[in-house]
Every structure is written in C-alpha cells, then in structure tokens.
Image (cartoon, rainbow, N blue to C red; front, side):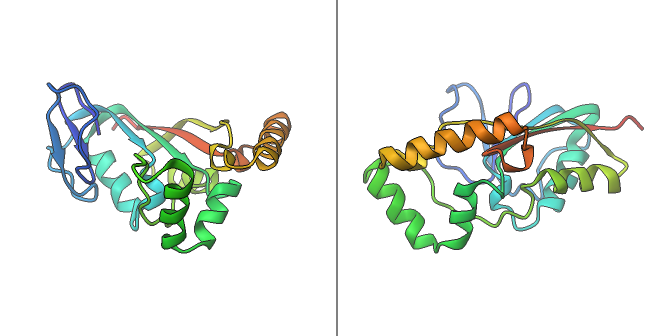
Length: 185
C-alpha cells in the first residue's frame, strides 16, 4: 500500500524503499488508516498468499478515495509454476530456491494458497460487489526463470509462453495485472 508518504507491508522484511519513506508493518485485513485516505494502492506478489483475500479487498476499498485505483500484480493460479507450487510441499519450495538461487537467495518462500489468482475471481469480485469496476485485467509474460537450471526446460518454457501469448490465453499467462477502481458514490 503506497500513498504519497507511506508504505505498509503485510510483514516487515526489510526495506528496499528509499530511506525517507516511512514503512509500517501490519495486517492487510485491518489497515491502520482512515477511510478514503489514499488514491492508489499497489499490491505485488501478495494475493497468492492471502487466506482471506475478500477481507483485504474490502480494506483496500475502505481506504481508497472514490475513483481511486487498486493495482494488483500476482502470479496466475493456472500458470505451470503456480500449479507445481500448489502441488508441492513448502519444504520443497525452500530447497528449490536455495538450490537454484543459492543459500543467500533474496527470494521469499511463503506458503501459497491461490484463493484470488484467476481472472474469474476478479471478474466475480467486480460483478458481485457494486463498489469495484475493472479498469484492466491482463496477463503478463515473463521468462521462465524457475527453469534456469535446465536449458531444455527453459526453452520449452519460452515456447509455451510465446504460444499462449499468441493464442491470447490470459487465463494461462504467468502473471496477472488487475486494476480495480473504487466506484464513485
């Protein structure tokens, strides 16, 4: 959550922000700001970890000014990396990250739940809750970094990415970018 002078993180993992930006750690289901305090909320790689994404969206809606936007960047539940992540135990994620990226990897391996990581989820949110309007819902491409350990798998990942992009299959893109606007009262 970023405002003109504030940043809140669900967990304080150290700051890669400019030193003059105050950081507040807190629960995204209970954000410590007044109603209609912000015009923009940004969430990156958070929604795949949320146990109660509806409560977080409710809080985002509460703190946004009318006409304000919420941009969410999240892995797609139906991307092959997400499917593998959902089917493997957390200990494997930690092993894999250490093995591929090294012992001092800067990557977090928090448990994933994938309760709010599909185009359908956000379409449902916008259709059922009169308070949100979808401004953008698109799939984002990226290189298959998780396959960097194997030339063959990496190339297959690139070909697969090119194929789904050509077919315009947003539901299979590796990441989703969703921009929701808080409807005017």
